[in-house]
Image 1 (cartoon, rainbow, N blue to C red):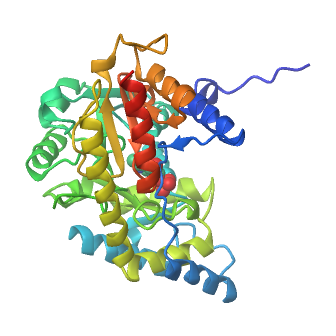
Image 2: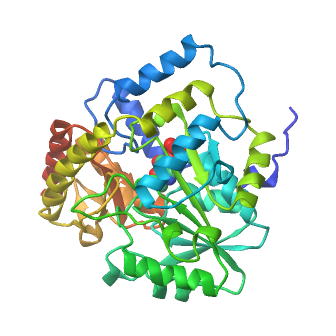
Length: 397
Ligand SMILES: Cc1ncc(COP(=O)(O)O)c(C=O)c1O
């Protein structure tokens, strides 16, 4: 039988490293086992009703045809207003591109700014998709280790240690998935100064900016002096409005870059779904109370989960200030033997928890840190409690 030769760009593409565990989790669930799934990367809430109704209205009105490639004029106007309200930044519709989820916005941005051989600085831990997108563009992933004492918050010093002569850009994700760390003003100003000195572009993924806690505000690096012209701001409706399935993300930045990204999109996917665009418009300009309600509930679970994890022997975590994940070090548990199995990495621990206690978390190897794991608190308080009980019981053996 003929063996088709795969193109290099996909032959070397890593599948999501969390897939094995994910497949196992689903297999156990399909056997009817009561697995507590703490891997979710999406809110457990339904999309608020008024947003769904806007989509139904769009169908009734016949808004079911191609739209402008980069999004409807109405949605772009809503994005401009939303960004202004949240960050103080002023954009015009030509500076905005609507895509099929923030992941797609990121892909358009990375492909439009990275030439083969260009270095792209990537703080660790990173969201699993970034390194693969950089590699797809032919870029060189330049990992930025954050010193332990910084508690997961990126500093200028961390970047200075990693920067190379071929570094062209930085992917910044604050609040971070997986760590929940939020970069505060002083650090952000120092990072911005470095970006200007070294002429770096910044892709600023702000998808979790509305989900912040303890009075912390997620500041956009684009809002600092001299930064709007070198930043592509990425956001979307997936996380803040519980709209992961609707697939709407957006980018805002210098119109020349946005135009290039739109050209790329015009030759690959064209416009995102017209109906989802109508829903996203409603989400952004309609009542914002549901966002605050969800945020408050996430915060309640966050505080509970942190206190539980911090009291478990063998685990350590900082209090995350944003997103809906705990980023937990299992380093104190390294080398232990539980139920006859030696635990050396978070992959081992995650597999042990899954098979012996039916609770599922995401090992940190995919985020660049094998002795950490990510657990999501985007699940009900009951399930969260049950999952933490099971984890604690097994660790205590
Ligand atoms: C940091 C980060 N950026 C982007 C995305 C992608 O969002 P979307 O579902 O809108 O493509 C995610 C989703 O998990 C994420 O965690």
